[in-house]
Amino acid sequence: MTTTITKPEEYDIVVLGSGEAGKYIAWTLAKKGKRAVVIERRWVGGSCPNIACLPSKNVIHSAKVASYFFRSEEFGISKENTRIDMSTVRDRKRKMVSGLVDMHLDLYKKSGAELVMGFGRFVGLKTIEVALADGGHRTFHGENVIISTGSRASIDPIPGLHEAGPLTHIEALELDQVPRHLLILGGGYVGLELAQAMRRFGSGVTIIERNDRLAHREDPDVSEALHELCKDEGIDVVTSAHLTRVEGKSGDHVKLRGARDGSEMILEGTHLLVASGRQPNTHEIGLELAGVETNDRGYVKVNERLQTTAPNVWAVGDCAGSPHFTHISFDDFRIVRDNLTGGDRVTTGRQVPFCMFTDPELSRIGLSETEAKEQGVEYRLAKLPMVAVLRTRTLSESRGFMKVLVDTKSDRILGFTVFGVEAGEIMGAVQVAMVAGLPYTALRETIFTHPTMLEGLIPLFSSVPPIAQPKGNLR
Picture 1: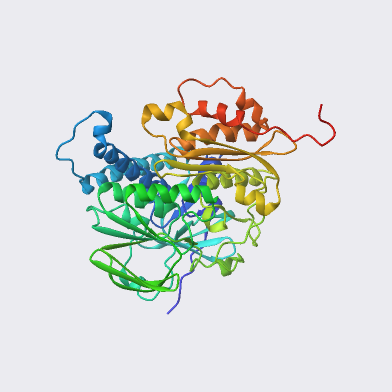
Picture 2: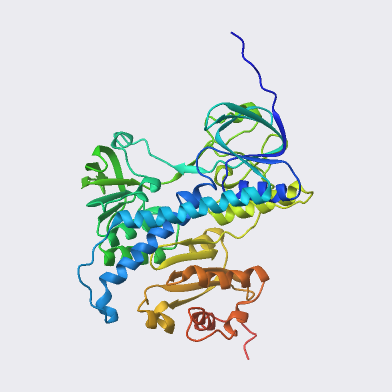
């Protein structure tokens, strides 16, 4: 029996994975006349529009609306027979996703980039063979190849966990019934966002966190505020938990066994959600045949220009170890786009903003106090409770605070954190000032519209301590 070797089809750009960076590279270069193809196993457009960022925010907003119903008397509105229909919540999300997929397909058509659905793996240098979704095979060779395969939820090797069939964020966003009691492994972004949403839909919720506090990489006052939020929402939080075994099946009955502070711990629920980390989608795609190396965690090794260990092969987004945010993946696209056309753009020193979409939101840009102390960076601190921002009183949304770190020897803004309503939008204004190299005094003296959330930046920056004067120079 002989095997027929198909001659590879030649392309200028071959992209494995249709996530944020990969698709934009293909669209952009195809518009410039390059022959570009994107190979996607399942999700047209990647995880963000299908199973992650946008769908989760859609469901979270439904939960926000539900919360308004349950506190309607506060706004002078009576409620009767309020109930949650999770199938409708799910269908609203599905309708949005369907529209986003159609938008992506239209962008492929308009750009001239080709989309091939199937499982792709390297079979040689810059050469990818695809088992097509509708049968058959195609092989592609690119002048440049982009690895954009993303990441997936990690399932820890806890005895019984895999057999329990736990939910990940993908399945959690497809629930058509409210879980009676949801156990969540992980107190980070995904765990906290979905914990609050499911609690607001009526589920009992328990978060199990291996570290001693929620969002443990953030400052202690941020973690404390999140713990307080969970308490007020009726979400149970178990920290410093070390699981030893999982019993039962998610969707029916689950029992978690472990230890906490030296004592045995048993937790029971009906559903189990794993939200304790991510791992790159780099296994079984033939990277070794392409001369592409990975690190000890499975991420593709890249330099500051996002080049891999193989010539003319690049890696972008989660699989390259970039911070796991869609907006960072988009910046990866800009870096590779420019470098492919003769530029010399790098990832070094770029800003990494984030927003956790709890209610209220948590956003940060630049250094936290914890990071500043670890790096030995001296700073001046100003902090303002959100209740001091008058707009929050009109909304009955006064929980939280904002704080800023300013350099001790100049007026440069080092970092900004806000836990409060519209935190992501507030952070954006400070980020622009940081990008522009403006002193904090520029925001302090800006005329912001009253009453808006941005107006709160004025009293915040007005409370920044002055630069300390050397002794002997006082007048």
